[in-house]
Amino acid sequence: MQIYIEFYASLMKYLPPGKSRFRREIRVDEGLVLNQLIEQFHISHAEAHIVLVNGHYVDGESREAQELVEDDVVSIWPPVAGG
Image 1 (cartoon, rainbow, N blue to C red):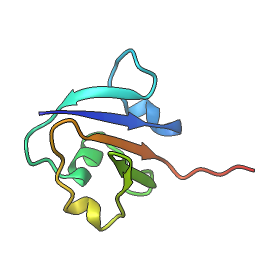
Image 2 (image 1 turned 180 degrees about the vertical axis):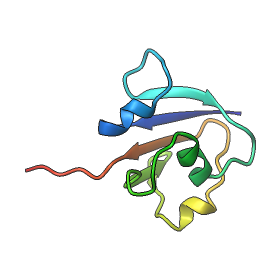
Image 3 (image 1 turned 90 degrees about the horizontal axis):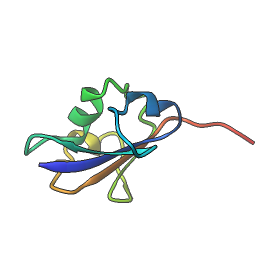
Image 4 (image 1 turned 60 degrees about the horizontal axis):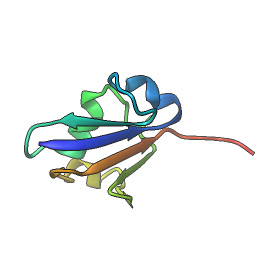
């Protein structure tokens, strides 16, 4: 099935090649769970600080159970600091 991934800031280095700066369209197996996707891209749990699916925040515990479906958009941000 097709989904979209968006990695921001220091996580952009994990994106596969593509034309868009932040977003990639990828194909994944049916039944893929959110944490499996994160691990597939070698992103640690500490690095995946903010995770959204279709604009909705998914907390750490829910990432084990959140099954992805066709056309989902998964957005991931690392911890950020600034002022």
